[in-house]
Amino acid sequence: MALSSRNFEFVRELLHEEAAVVLQADKEYFVERRLEGLGGAYEKASADQVVEMLRSSQDGELKTRVVESLLVHETSFFRDPGLMTHLADTVIPDLVAKRSGARSLRIWCAACSTGQEPYTISLLLQEHLDSPADWDIRILASDVSGQALDRARAGRYSITDVNRGLPVRLLVRYFQQQGLVWQVNESTRSMVEFRQINLVESWPELPVFDLVLLRNVLIYFGEDSRQTVLERLHGQLAGDGYLVLGGTERIVAPRWRLARKQAPSPFYQPIAESKVS
Image (cartoon, rainbow, N blue to C red):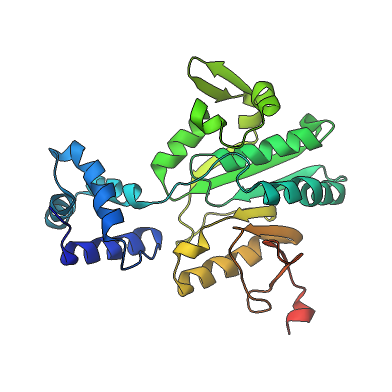
């Protein structure tokens, strides 16, 4: 049964309310496919029937499952090799040099999905630092999806997952094979704290960050939500820190008080207040 226009609009509004995601008007097939995959848990209900059940009952568990099923969790280790090379060769050495006195780094992967990105950052830091144990490194990894965070915390990845971008030498060094699964080792996992945070709702108390990765997230938000998130991020970013967006994402300075560090890279740094005014 095809998803009715009425129920498609209900889903669009629900996704925007719960996750600030703006679902385009031509995504009916995407919604049908995702919700039909969900229907197996509800007596093989069609997408339309799943939405009707939600509308009639306001079942909290069902609402969570519907929203979770429609979130995009595309990620991989070392996703966007060019960006990761710039991060490894330029940004991380710059931050390490500037923080060598305090030997402390605070990093936020603000839409971490199933964990590949924060674990990648942990690997890069361990590879760059002569003695990682002598540093106080905290990587906050957050996502709106509880299901994605459960997978991320477990740190267990399939052969397909680790074959997507992870160099073999790092796989052997930082993972343990357990049958058909590869487990992230303890030193890598200990750097990362996973928390469920909805970026457009109230944030918990957070530290000032040296590096924030918010890749391929703003493209799903409406203009008001983008403004809210970027204004908050400016307040959480160290004056010499870095914000990393997705490779195709752009923000305009000085409106956001953030300027691209080096065009056309998606690396931004705060603009001094005197230069904004």
